[in-house]
Image (cartoon, rainbow, N blue to C red; front, top):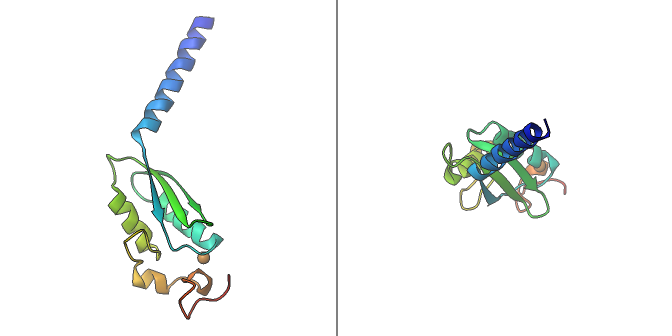
Length: 116
Ligand SMILES: [Cu+2]
């Protein structure tokens, strides 16, 4: 009985390891300003095909994304961030999406920016 449990535990850990190995991590520098931005970007990532998880660090404005390289590419992920209204590394924010952001989420050097 003990052996069976050990085998099951082993199989589970192997499958977890295999899943982790299948994802790749990238870090994308964004123009996020506040918690609302963080929520908005992470939500967009949650709907993005091939993205397993994402976390935005507001202090560094760096978005860390775990994705499946078979399903998506860093380029697609950057474009998805840009489509949300934020710069993503060298991909500039989509102008229409950026204009629709609330004033506090605009870039600090933008005259429309309020707060923070
Ligand atoms: Cu914001």
